[in-house]
Amino acid sequence: MDLSTTVDPEPTPEATTPDSPGHGPADLVFLSGPVHTVDPARSRASAVAVRGDRIVAVGHDAEVRDLIGPATDVVDLRGKLLIPGFQDAHVHPVGGGLELAQCDLSAAETADAYRELIASYAAAHPQAPWITGGGWSLEAFPGGMPTREFLDALVPDRPVFLVNRDHHGGWANSVALERAGLTSRTPDPADGRIERDADGRPSGMLQEGAMQLVADLIPQPTLAEQTAGLLRAQRLLHGYGVTAWQDAMLGRAPGMVDTIPAYVAARREGKLTARVTGALWWDRARGAEQIPELLEQRSVLTGGRLRATSVKIMQDGIAENHTAAMLSPYLTACGCASDNSGISFIDPEALRSYVTRLDAEGFQVHFHALGDRAVREALDAVEAARRTNGLRDTRPHLAHLQVVHPDDIPRFRRLGATANIQALWAAHEPQMDELTIPFLGAQRAAWQYPFGDLLRSGATLAAGSDWPVSSPDPIAALHVAVNRRTPDDPPSTPAFLPEQRIDLGAALAAYTAGSAYANHLDDTGTIQPGKLADLVVLDRDPFDGPDEEIAATRVLQTFVGGSRVYAADNA
Image 1 (cartoon, rainbow, N blue to C red):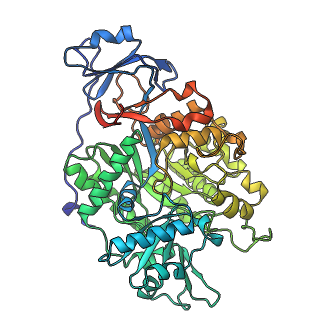
Image 2 (cartoon, rainbow, N blue to C red):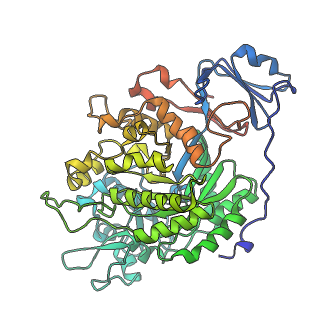
Image 3 (cartoon, rainbow, N blue to C red):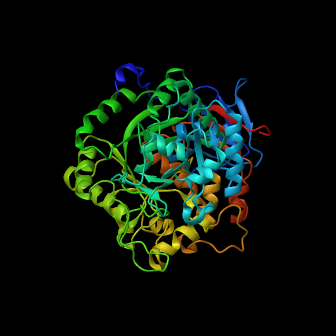
């Protein structure tokens, strides 16, 4: 990609120097808290004052009232909780925003519901050359394997390609498979699998890198459509109190559009209100020769509220389709060991070399590491970089961490590797109970999502949603991190590995200060004088209620740099 033709040369603005409280009235004041600061030295206050884009005072009402002038915007909290803005450390806003305008299946859960939604969307879009979208759940189909015949009955005359909720698999109809030239003789790609029927023909389900065989044929959305998707996602995320995020796939990745032009356009037009750290996609089909290109992208993309200072390396797949990289084989349906231990997308020795090179160039590395072998390979790569380069402030982080061998838990703290958790997944759901636990076995199943062990070991926790894989609502994630049950589960539902619960304070810190650390946004994440005024007003104080009611909390207002970017109708 010729970045000189796509990226504006917007310079990075000068940092704002915080004024002292005595330099005139505040622009914005919050009174009659509580305020949860995520500052261990002063965890609670009742008032906050903001001048420009910075916090200038935190304390009690009497300490802040003198900063109220004739033009000061005063927010009376009336007992509602003020917190730092949430930061999503692993999210895909452009793809999520685009899918909201396509055949969106994410709100449904059954095959019958998908049948109705697909048929309705196809009927409403008779001129669309392809039916695209996604968000369907694996557990809606036997073995997580929908068929081409299901789609053929609904859309026989046009290609259909629908990615599943976790975006590690795609579902195609016969027309799409024929256009891609897929037959019983087509070999599996090195980084994926073509599922097949009893006769060896492609069944309609494409796993991991095999998705690209069809996805490459789909007409790409226009720049206007991509930018609209990003801004649609930004509105949604601000509505959930998210003020900053790390885009976990900046660039052209398998089955995904190149997200860079949308960010550039939004920034150029002054519409990027969130703070965004971009994780540049590491092409696993290539090697170290791509590092100069990544350096160029970092240089020209970083400016304003966008910085491209991270590199995303996807080391494995997911447990549900048995592509997550495991130290020992998956079990079969009978409980016997199989011959499949998942896929390491990058050779571990090469991974150590690449990460060492990236670390030496000052890049953060953002790993997708879900299985215990992938986690170990990623940590080994971080250790190799530390051994060669010393302990640099690159803040590598490992996302997902579904299965972590106990021997690797203390390595996070020792290596300075952040544990980037997606807490919504740590609960009993059909995908967990039917497609994962039986094929992991009892011992490995007990190593899943070890938030409590990581926290107790001294690891830094960050948090993200992986939206559109799962809901972007941080409050729902907090609920699961604390309860190890979904928000829809009654309290009588067994908690999923309850010893791995973390308390609300730790979960909220992960989604604010922890993610700010992972994003290298050190002047955000807590409410302290001098920090940027990225703030969220909740409709209640969830610390005052039972843990089972955390998910009932709603966001009323969201501020980025002291500017209101979201207000609920009842705010």
